[in-house]
Length: 481
Image (cartoon, rainbow, N blue to C red; front, side, top):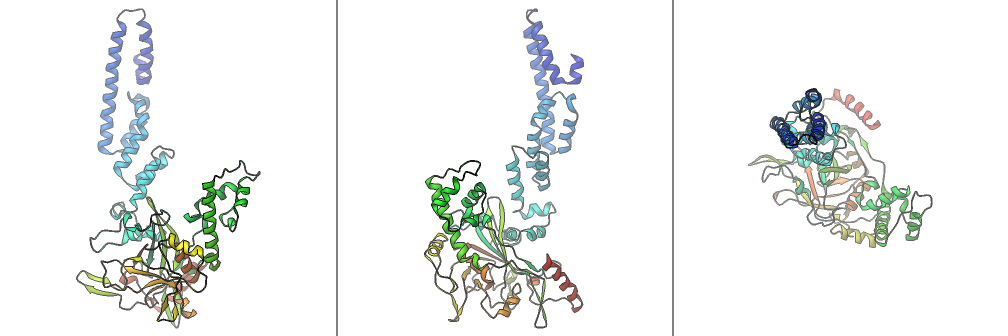
């Protein structure tokens, strides 16, 4: 028995108990003695395990835990340790609350029962500036990958000094979850932190990424088709497709599912006709645009974002142009502040354009998104600002301009060359398709965050003439990318 304990205490206990159970059949009273003996042994095992468990919890020491496991079966509580190994690692990871720790856990236990909770905890770290800073994680690198994090990591509320919180971006006027978590981020800086003109690379949303077509996407996957292929499809054709003998198994469609799919098909028809018709290829624009013997700095973008539980998704990124760099800043009691644009705004109106007929479905779409007008917004009574979406500053910014909006570029074509550069009268300009997409996607009262810094909001590059060749060469490379 002694040799067995040295080899595997747990197994020795099991084997010894079987041995004494047999002996107790022939020796009266032995069963009471062995029961007491093994009860004491259990207490020793539990006591020893609890002692080391307490050390692990107190020190948050992964190495100590791994050393105990690596000691193998010589530990009297080894089997219990192995049983709780994943749980212990999980508790240590939560206690440490560190992105690297979460990544390590997911690598070590890819199929863990705690996987979803670990992913959730890791994602929440990216909304906490202090956590990221303490872990020496570059906020700039996060913003470069996804500008939709700008409000949470770079924009403080002047009334309380806090960064934007997740609940702040929620559109409380909307009840439909498809629309209430949508918001817009206008990043109007043209310089990066190193003093270089940033350039722009647009990205468009695919049909599969829009929640308006979620059920069509699922149906398309099952039938081996594409969302776009459902344009103008009828109910009989939909049912026929579901019963296609080539499918591995027929798709059962009840009345409710058919109604949902037909509603999404109506929405798809509207989108393809009213928006996608105007689509052009995404624009890549170099950091410096030479025009009128002047080198304009390019880098202004507008991102359309969705908050998705514990993460943020950038749906699209468009090139934009804001007010020319004149009279943006003033000294106030709190120091230098941007007073033309408020950082926190909301959409308060949605107008139409003369390129399209405002159909009955467009009326239904406007109602679904909280309101909209078939009217045309005119500047100085005669200049059409197509697909104008007016925005107001938050009430805490009473001196910020209240007459601005997001709209299609409508001036002379040469001004299209200045897109991406501070060059408008005051509104945020978009190209045609981009403006129509924005108007179709954006619900009433969606939050609009405008981010700019005084030393990075540059219209004309300040680089020396000798540097222009290098910049333009980099721009040509960027265009190829």
